[in-house]
Amino acid sequence: MKSLEEAAALLRGAERVMILCHQFPDGDTLGSGSALCRGLRQLGRRAAVRCSDRIGPKYRFLFEGLPDDAFEPDLVVAVDVADRALFGEPVGPEYGGRVDLCLDHHRSNVRYAKQSYVDPQAAATCEIIDVLLKLLGVAIDKPIAEALYTGISTDTGCFRYTNTTPAAHRIAADLLETGIDAAAIDRAMFDTKSRARLEMERRVLDSIRFACGGQIAVIRITKKMIAEAGAVEDDLDGLATIPRGIEGVRVGVTLREKDDGFYKVSLRAVSPADAAKICEKFGGGGHRGAAGCTLPPPLEEAEKKILGAVERHLKENR
Figure 1: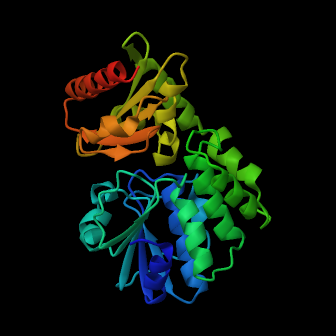
Figure 2: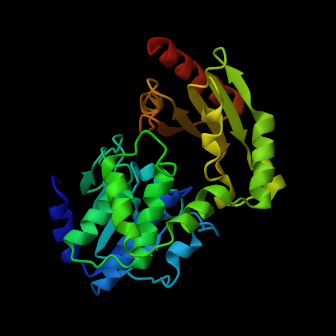
């Protein structure tokens, strides 16, 4: 698919649209899902959002007023999902093999959908959704604007990451014109912490170790740590950015234990290091500054593999 006009035409021809988000959801996949769902409903379409993980308190406001509708879709759309493996269960088995349209900004997108629109220059998938909704003739009201702003703000680290573009600022400015309280959204996303989140940060900091002369920092997130802290998914959002924020660290590595025993690896890199190139060696991908992959247990072996790949990459990209 070469243009968003084609994506808009596909959506115009559908009456019942199921929108899919990725597991371990962040503000961009949920903001994209919410905004697209609201926009389609504004046009009289039947639309709903599905995610394998429960939406926690942090992002629940994005879905206020959106009933959990159940129907058989005539169009399945994935937002911010680069690979069907990222859907998780139960969304993956039910819908992963029948995605008609994927809207994404990850350069590592494997084009698993029947049709895909991928713009790696976009700071967030919500940028793409913003343009798409305007092509569809949707009025960007406050709930839609809140969803779009949440996605752009969270994926750019409140406009601090290197993926922040002039376009991201322009879209955000337009969204502010709708009267949304951006300061309140940013405060909720970045400055407000639950007690469980503080407990997770304490445990994560206790787990930290360094490699390659302090250029690599590694943290672990195990199921035991999550249970002890009483944490939910919202409390884990953003923990992967902690290692990269340490002085002298070029690549931050987070290994999170999944329910199936495998480990979700999240890399956060400082240029010229490229997180996506490292993760692609293990079947993953993402962006230059942030990427991920999955490795099998045991934890020590998974850590050894990813550390070896990161060290080789750093030596090649000094």
